[in-house]
Image 1 (spheres, rainbow, N blue to C red):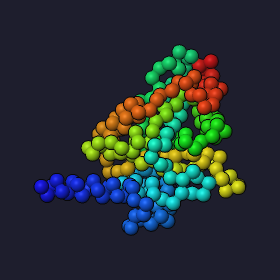
Image 2 (tube, rainbow, N blue to C red):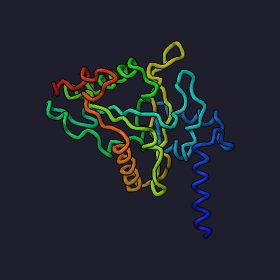
Image 3 (cartoon, rainbow, N blue to C red):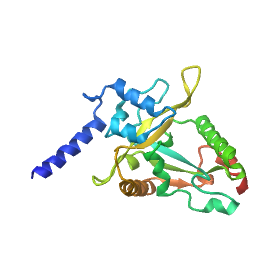
Image 4 (spheres, rainbow, N blue to C red):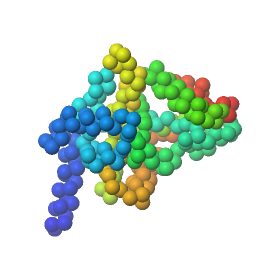
Length: 239
């Protein structure tokens, strides 16, 4: 009985840290400072999860120029690139499996970069695609480029059974301009919510999150992305 009550207390404590507008123990300033550190060049998901567990930083005061906190029912996009997600050496490679559970490993290390589709305009999507394309081409030549996308609801990563660890989703706008705005205001990061997990524990939770993304979202080929023309960013090796 006592063990059952302790388990309930743990669940309610975690629920409160995630959903209360104010946290008595962690001020908005401190949480914003945590996110600022997270968004710096030295990103450390493990440190963030240890300092602000149970996704406390999701309640940080939003930055000016950002769409605000990532809210329930938002749709996120993970851009898929070559060779990071799929190594493209010839046109036929584009039809191969592009998205795997292992692709979520960045959420446990440096943050999984996503775009918030409810807020991103076409210009921002094109700018983001161009940036990713340039990075891959500069590093990999003809084999570098975009190969598709995964669109999924935020609940696919934020919610899972009690035996597995959910992830947090933070608003992390990028590429600040001189006019106090951002070229990528709708950028976000998916990060693990618990520190100290073993590789086996991370893998188990990663599989659960991956299956939820597949079930609730959509893995899209180049031609299935209809909010901008992604075909101009495919690897030259696929042409």
